[in-house]
Amino acid sequence: MGTDRENGSLYTKIDGKVATVEFGHPAGNSFTAELLNRLVKELDQLSNNDAITVIVLKSEGERAFCGGASFDELLAVSNLEEGKVFFSGFAHVINAMRTCKKVIVGRVQGKTVGGGLGLAAACDYVYASEAAAIRLSELSIGIAPLVIAPAVERKIGTAALSELSLAPTEWKSAYWAQEKGLFSKVFDSLKELDKELDFFANKLSGYNPEALYEWKKVLWNQTDHWDELLVERASITGKLVLSNFTKEALNKFKK
Image (tube, rainbow, N blue to C red; front, side, top):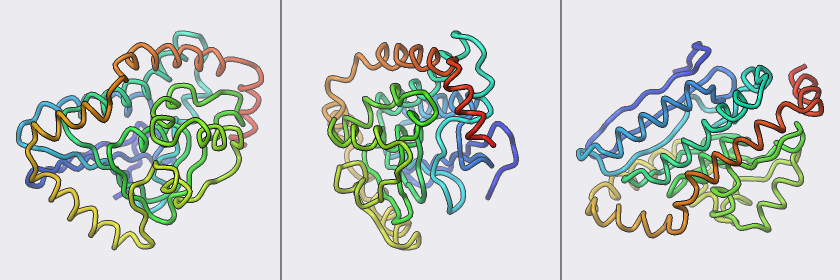
């Protein structure tokens, strides 16, 4: 089900102990600031919901998983404060995923760019389709993937992060992402993916929730400083987005 709403949509469906959170936006499932804020609130609420154990994070449709930040909102940033606030949106989502008491399983059905890659990396386990190519396009528009880098690097390491980010116009395949540790499983059909994901999420949701939470804390060990770090990074990105270089690049990109 697509959405025409310019701020996007967010739906949560609870089935047994599994909550499925689905986000959508007509522009390649990209994120507006409002949608990022709604996702943070939803994750915080689900984190404290004792009736569920597992969260599945997915996006609408069968095409792109996530196009990253909203282009229109990027173009509209006119001062440092607005820039910081906008990029802090992704910082807050990654931190909400990191501190969420539930295991988060990602469903990545298609291409994923920029901030979308940060979301995939902040999941605890990821099911992807063969169509789920990835790209960090930030340098090509004059900014850098500063906010999401810690989440991506935690999964794939510095060498793969360098390779991905310094070739910002190059797509890497879902199998590359799996080999580097970003995706846990890759399937050649969505039907197969959904069948396996459903089975996995249900099985996982039957485990001791306290044990899962204690284990998740171990997996995210030494990331407590991200609350400050990611927001600092958002400030730097906000400054970069105001440069003439970036404004021109964004306008060209849009055309």
